[in-house]
Length: 178
Image (cartoon, rainbow, N blue to C red; front, side, top):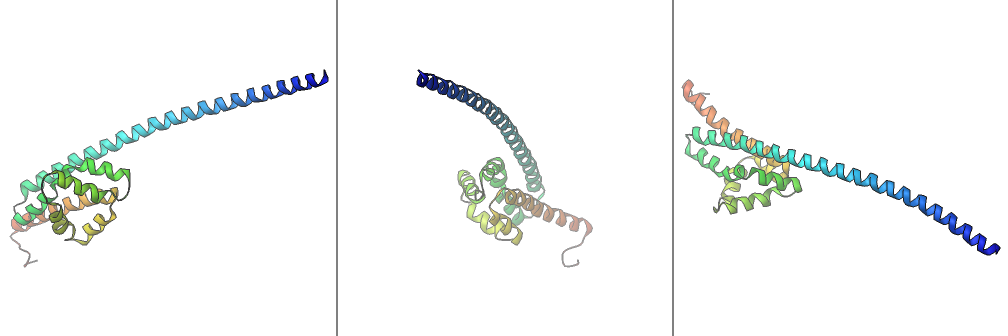
């Protein structure tokens, strides 16, 4: 009889222990679910924000490129500016792929150039990228920051060249007189 009482007491004690243990685990599980939901909402918000930033940057870069192509009278520079067009037209796609991880810039850029149906990728690399040490460094970084900086440098480079040639023509000063 004593053995039955001890076994019953042990069983009741273990049941009480496992009940409180299960309650504690259930509260922990609910807390973790709440945190996961909040993290998911925050992730969605940040993803949407990054997509908005990328599309705004793309619009801005496209407008600058259109102005650059419209105002650029030097055919060689206009051809080089024309080479960066697929890079800027696919800005959001390249931006998104660069966000996913390092080492995506060159591969996704090649895919974007290939999807345009032209074989300008090699020409782009040879004439635009390998032409300047700054652009080579940004291209070699092969990441998102390098991409954003590369687009900005290219737009400024071709924009300033057109602007500086316009100023010298207005002032009647050529490069030899400087």
